Length: 184
Length: 403
Image 1 (cartoon, each protein chain N blue to C red):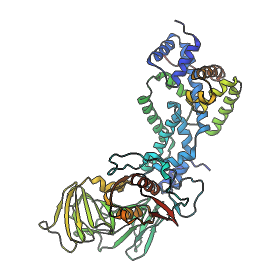
Image 2 (image 1 turned 90 degrees about the horizontal axis):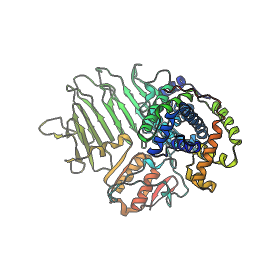
Image 3 (image 1 turned 120 degrees about the vertical axis):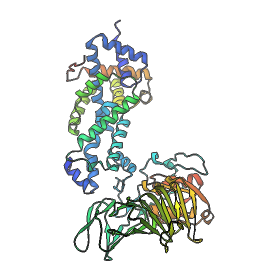
Image 4 (image 1 turned 180 degrees about the vertical axis):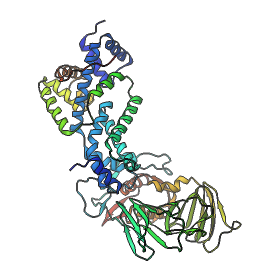
């Protein structure tokens, strides 16, 4: 059973440590997904979120919170991810990034929602030519580097890039939203 | 210039994987500025890509691993039971094998430079036997002699004989009510077993950190007009004394008294150590014999950054300038040995981890070692001794045997 913020805070404040696991179960994946949206690195997203969980416990931050934990955690994840990005990503189109990020709703991320998205995506992927499908899966879903994907599929990095382009080109057409430009 | 679609798409991919040159970035920027439709197209790619990435992430994320990873990094009372493949009942299981390299030992001394040791050095050491560690309880002896077990995982109130709340305990901290004075002194005695640490805030606001294997006796309330006196009956404590110039604070540690007005210092009086050590972090302290009363002329004054070592057999003290961090690191979970005999290192490891170590290699006993550990498991500590000093060990019948 999943507890809500208030129930978790109550547990933590009376020193019931199982509340910390409840907090983790409730927020770890949504927070990591949220961070990922900004930083695009599976590992970095998890590192950032784990660091926040550690800090939350070590600094007893729950003692300062009253009715909710989620907003605090999401905000901390966003701040830390953005500061990481600003330090590490050299070439970014800030405005477009934030525009796109706003379109991706996230605070309400739940597993069912993502499962639904996943079903749709897989349906689209199945329609791709075999090689494009494999490359797209390897790079985007399984987080392989071009070089790793090339080794795994026994082709050159350039071939990987070509299949990857083809896959994205075709999949983009399946987008069921219209991006409304608010950019000036 | 109209660029061809395939080329632009490659630039977009290079942007997505942040693997593009400044020249390519500028080309992409120019292309975006050419036509609002291009920005729209680019945004769609980015949007689709990001949505797909999070699907991929949720497919690949390993929450159990993440949970264990978080637990290994906690400094504050990290006794949340991690997820283990085979849960071990009742006895607390040392979190071995789930720690990672980040918090590894840094060796100084013989090696000269610190380096990280790897998990795979479990090599010859572990003989299939695993170590189970008893979870000994912190106890509080009340003024009437009753002994209570302190459950660190909760919040409790301490009530005195007349039904009044005298202290509140939340997690690892026991906090006494702040009141001006009592009519007569009533003592409580806190006993911290091996493997545990604890903190008590006395009624004057003085904070005391207690290391593993320590016993502290102190009044529930201090009396106005009388010195604030506490007794470190055994072990090690770090005092952050609340300022009160009218009431000197005196710590009795075995043969000596340490008198302060308001300051931070560390005292250790473990049986295996030949001396009682007082390390001053801030302020000023005076040290005098346990049966004496304080006299400025005959007592020993200590300055910050210095350590007074009272030799228990010679009954005299020496003063040395020290790095105070070495002596206070234990408060933050560190285990620091500087020029310590191996037999004493063993005692300190036993106390810190609540394990039994039997050393069959007596040649090692008198040798001195330097080592610093952060939050490693006992296995990791032993493995780093194995790695750095070729000290072999096995685990038999829940005991660590050094050969």
